[in-house]
Image (tube, rainbow, N blue to C red; front, side, top):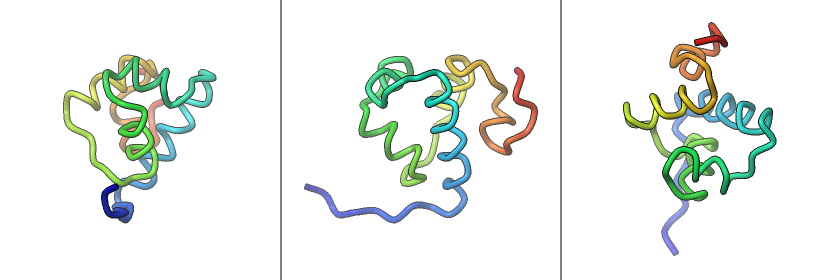
Length: 80
């Protein structure tokens, strides 16, 4: 088992928004991972702010949650 990684302060608000978007759809971590194309552990780490988001992942999140990248990053403009 790997060492625990601390959340990155700049990623914590983004992770909270991702969790809110996932929960609003009633999705589990597993379902979100299937939609994004990653493991449920990766979704968990994104939501906790432990890992950053690649451009590809950011675009996929925007597509599946039907929000703009601005909304994910800054919490503005909830519609894409």
